Amino acid sequence: MRKQIPGILIALVIFLASSCVSYEPDPINVAATARSFEEATPERALQSTAKELDLSDGVSVFEARLIALAQNPELLAMRKKIGIAEAQLVSAGIIPNPTFGIVWKNNTARNTGPNYEVEIIQSVGSLFNRGISQERAQAGLDNVRAQLAHQEWALLKEVEAAYFEVLYRRTALDLASQAVTLFKRVEEVAKKRVQAGDATKLDENLARIERNNARKDKTVAKADLVVAKQQLSRLLGLSPTYAVKIKDHVLESGTTLTDMATLQAYSLKHRMDLAGMLEDYEAAEKALQLAIRRQYPDFQIGPTYERESDGADLTGFGIELELPIFNQSQGEIGKRAAERAQLKSKITAHILGIQTEVAAAFTKYQANQELVKLFTDEVIPSLDESLMLLDKSLKAGEIDVLLVITSQEKVLRAWSSHVEAQRDLIKSRLKLEQAVGGDLERIHDDTPEQSKGE
Image 1: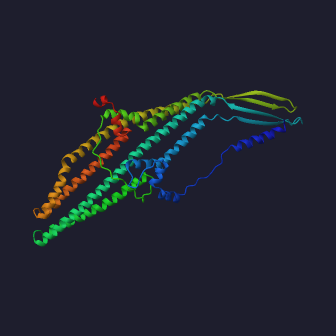
Image 2: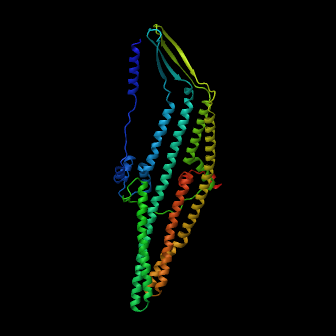
Image 3: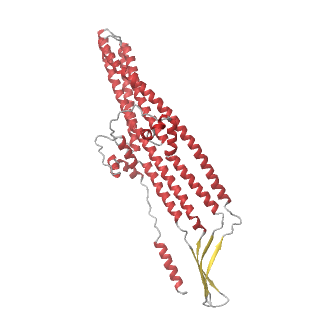
């Protein structure tokens, strides 16, 4: 038996070493990472989602959402946290390893040879805490999943906002180009009038100044459109140099809303950031339960074997018990209780913040709806007619150049304000949907008729 002990130890070490994981380095190459964005395309992103969509005529809002969900770098990084939380759940369910010990003793007074003791000790108290540890880790995993869902929803709203920002900037560029054309025509008419003696050089100079101002505004509008496309590309996980082609989309006039109280109630059920905080609170509850259980002493049990120097073999059963004389987990219990109380206060404040956020977004959206309706019903119908009358009067010589310049500025400013109002309406809708945690159309469709009328 004495000769077998070293062999058993060697075999045990080899077995344990064979089940270990080896380290594999994973260095970061900044240049290669930057180049990878040059190779990213919307088509490749949609291939990873198993969606067969035609992008030849441009990317729609729906397709942009799919692309962002497939390859937005920040979202991909957030998804890695799922693996971390899952590993923590696995760790919480693993039974603690037993402890193996061997002691050689040599009696120097007698030359009878050494004796040794062998023991295997298993912690028992940790086995009773295993269930709560798993529940705590599961709550942590659910919290990460809720955070991921919240980030995905926020990303979708951000993508929509960036998409419509490109549309707005493109429309603004069209208006700027139209202004250049109009003021060029005014300048040409002013030149002809100066030559005919019907206008002064001042009229021609004013027309030229307005045309140059319009050209300056067009240059700025071009740059704003490029920046808006770059922002959309970033959200889609594409290089800023990638030319994103988007489909035409009519800027909306608004969505029918239910009452604010219904939206607030909906938000408390569907805001995933709140759901994540509630899961975090559940984890804090389990952490406090673990701390309370750990105030009781842990003990270890296991078999023992001893061979004495005279060759006698002794077997038995051992137990080791911690004496909680000084440390009864007072600090840990106090810390976990304070963390739970703090988290409860944070959730209370967050609930109030959600209700306030919904109320503010609701008010802003209603105001933008009224503004767009005002432009659509009263302002816009007269703009086209005003431009036509101005052009006709200018050609007929019935109106002076300065009045034409002033009138065209007002008309173009009104068109620009209308487009801005549509952009603000879309942004306020997206802000409200982000605050509520759902699409307004879906909320409106899911609301019972009775609650709509209350």
